[in-house]
Length: 483
Image (cartoon, rainbow, N blue to C red):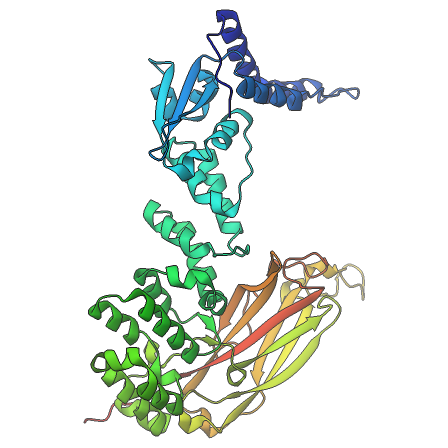
């Protein structure tokens, strides 16, 4: 905290302003020096900017040359924090401070405890252009930057939040950051948080922050088909616990329960839920039609069911389930080395009618596949010569094809999803997801920006590529039969 001192001589105040002015002009001076010396082989730049930054920090620390005073008060304390500051530096960074200090030299600011605790860091940023923060300090620092219209700091904190979603904290932070982004209207941060929560939902369901999810956020998540979790039953169990703790009003609880995709739960598990779930018993009338439809879905053949019901809706579309019947993990060691292949089996569809039917899938991975435009061709100028091609011109390629065809495939197509696991802050999480449909055997932009040659690549864990391939069977409605 800056030291409160007595009145400062006019000369000292002028010196403080002059030092600040030098600080502001430094980038311009350096640019001019470079322009003047660019043509001289003996050119050199003498840079004492770090020394200048240190002296500016000392200005704040000791109050030398101060011409303004900030008094920061909180409702929880009678004592104010006092900062001897310099109007020029504050006004340069913040139009709010420029207005506050225009006709007065002493300003009292009222802050809640969480932002008051960071005010010294905030002021130091205005002097030095840098600040270090922790996960729990991101929101109050963003609040200070927004309140005083320090746009550079505001953008910097928002970027910090987007790049630290995977960081581990005792109580979790992504849900809180999402709710904050909604309050301030930051759509980009909202989407980043929402996508992270969707792709790593199983980890969130078992964490302390699941209980802090708002009903609005829960409904947004339940609408999504790209949720990554073990099964729909896992999702129902977590939602049941959330409803038991939050106790929302009846209509809202019913909206939540109707967003569960009951046809994706096996009949034996649905019977158990009907017999044992207190939440389902309490709201049974609101979801009775969905449960009845789910039992019909499992009892009839998909072709017959599709004649009477619209299966082209989210209720009959699987999410990204990690259970073995829906896909397979594939860890590729040294993925930059050569082509690899594997195979696995999945259940033909989510209906119990298809429970005993399996589809075999063949997968090919190539680390340096070349598009046609980059493949070697013979040159006209030199007979037999081949254009040189660099290894780095190739890009990773993943091809997924069924190993067989069957009449059972009628009325069903397959959406393929490839999850790429990355290690962030010591945890393995999903950061990338690629999806493509039956009409294509591969996705065009698969790992397009990955550098698998580097052992430190963010796409690699211990020099291995961690993939999880998911096959999502999608049923199609047929010609309707009049009821």
